Image (tube, one colour):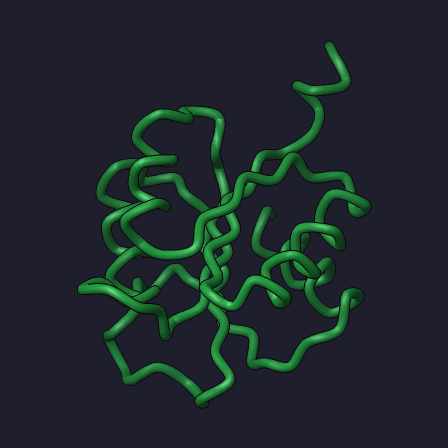
Length: 123
């Protein structure tokens, strides 16, 4: 097995570039291959072209017509086994807004908490 195959691939969707850059750095150091998107439209393009993406880490509040919960629903529709971690600095999403199989982590979060939550989501 190659080293690349052993690293899970995650799509990080965050419109605030400093927050995204920090998350990407933490995840790469934590053993993940990371793909980035600034909004749901970019994320869907990545999901459609990258069959290796098995996890989605997305903020709820983003610019455009689709928020993170709608993106998570679309991701699960494309790949029913997609692992989901949702985040927001504005509190919990409304009941039923995000897929039931998604995990939620409030902002701000530490590097340790992000990695711990993703490891839990992967199982």
